[in-house]
Length: 455
Ligand SMILES: Nc1ncnc2c1ncn2[C@@H]1O[C@H](COP(=O)(O)OP(=O)(O)OP(=O)(O)O)[C@@H](O)[C@H]1O
Ligand SMILES: [Mg+2]
Image (cartoon, rainbow, N blue to C red; front, side, top):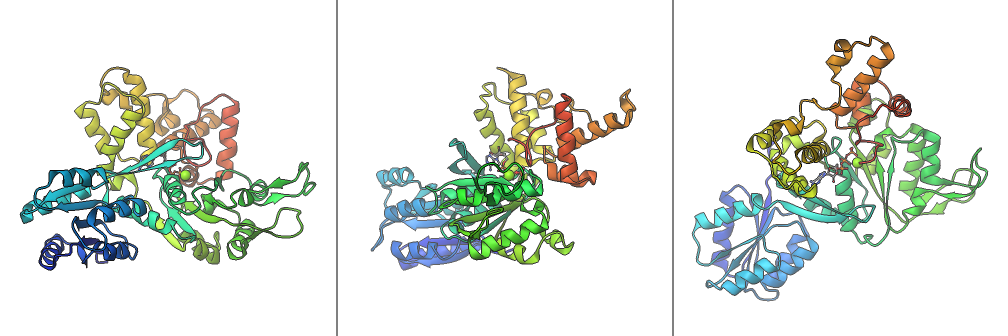
């Protein structure tokens, strides 16, 4: 499959300049749109996702500074390169203050322009801030072009009410992207409600989502509103939607088609005003093929599919994320070159969550010192028992102990992702959940994170 070209928008009122810019950027391998004033540029921004906008300052109708300000509002993740005229330093300062990614001063050579374009795309990691469900500010950081483009598309689709399906391995940032979509949507002031479809058995999930009337089943002592109702005016995130049982899938389909919910044991359907975002880390197409997931529901959910690349496919992010987490966990001593190299070479099965946990633990162990290779414990030296040891190294040959160690080690290996762990071990997520509950009761600690566990 041919690689799709990325688009750059060039806005300049001067024809010769516009065309020269367009040609240079075109030679760098981008597809280019040309706008002759700010207003036209703004209109074009609404038509497709751009990788970069290059704009002149002095333009009729809407000048470059106002275009920049509006683009910042509407497309917060779009890098903007500003071309300032006649060596006006105040103009450059103003551009940077208004959120330009970089600027070049006229006249400039092609080399200077190319370098500025490159810098805009790679040097500055794209950062978006969103509030999580606890009202804390969390940041989405990436230097990876594919991720940057995906975040841009997410911001764009946020404006409409279309259902979004976010696919990606555990810990790749699916929930963060869902929060971004909510924050960038007209529903931002409304609630954001997340439900993990893998965490509850079928009948509990049903009443969790749809609510129930008093006396609907044993234990339903009072009437309860479901999460669909609670998300009214806002967004509902259906995490790991692939784990939903078939009967519930039919009920969900009805919600999506009719925007109404039926409480368990209830009378009239209740209208709900919601935006639905679903996530999955399983290959949902394959589940459709196997008959485990309804095809019609799949198409209803995947109106806008977004696929998050795993961390191992975006090595440039390991470094920026490491720095981000070092700061977050107050690692004052920094990190040695060897340790950083080790992080860069690690396969990151648990993705960003695993990296975060590793940095957090290392920061604790290192204290005021620089984090070194030993502090990273990437070979599982601290605490957890590897599968090999579980099989033959340990003195206990008790089958139950071996099972427990294997489960806990596999869970650790997959960054705490229960869905993956269950898959790898060939057991149901339900069985896994029950086993983990038993271990917790017996005082054996399982690694945190992943589906159904607190982050
Ligand atoms: N690009 C990023 N920048 C900063 N932090 C990130 C980024 N991506 C993920 N994280 C952090 O990594 C952790 C996991 O992210 P998140 O919960 O969004 O992943 P997920 O794909 O929903 O995982 P799961 O499949 O296990 O539910 C969180 O602590 C999140 O804040
Ligand atoms: Mg998640």
